[in-house]
Length: 186
Image 1: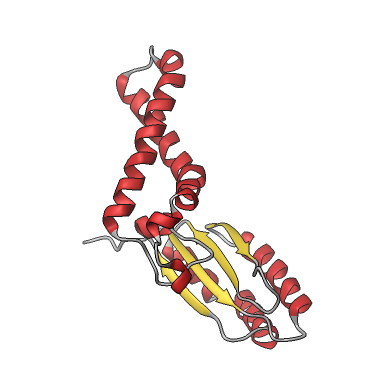
Image 2: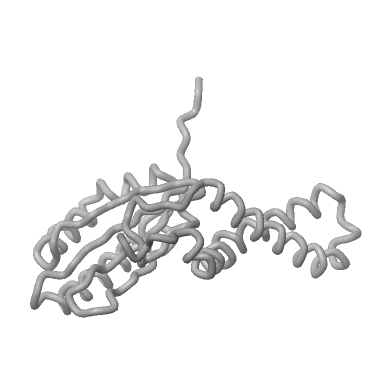
C-alpha cells in the first residue's frame, strides 16, 4: 500500500483590515496566532504589517505536516476566528506551498510569484556550500572522533535547520533584486 505524502506546508495569507477596524484586526491577529500556536504541528507565524495605512497584511505560517494544517483548518476554534476575521477585514487571499518555494517568500511580492527554479537551485547551493564549509571547519575538530555516519548526520541536520530558519530567509532578502527583478510591477 502506497503511503500518501504528508509534507510540511507554508501558508501565505493576505488580508486588508476594513476601514476603522484596524485595532480590531490587530487583536484578531494576536488571538488567532496564539490559538494556532497551541495546535499540533504549528511551527510559528510571521506577520508583515503594511508600510502605509490601509495596506495589506501578509501572514506566513507553517505546519510540520499538511494533515496538521487540515486539522487546524477544520477545527471549530479556527472557524470562530474566521468569523471574526470576516467582520474586521476584507476577503483573504491564500496560497499554500511546500518544497523549495517556501524558502523564497518575500512580504513585498505578490502571492503566486516565485523565482525561476534555476535561481532557487543556485541560491540553495550557495547556502549549502557556505554552511557546509563553515560548519565543517567549526565542528570538524569537535566531532572528528565520531563515526563518519554520525558526523554526516550531525552536519546535515545543522545545515537543514540553519538553511530553513536563518540562511535562506537572509539570502532571499539579500538577493531579492535578482530573484524578483520585476517585483515593483506586481
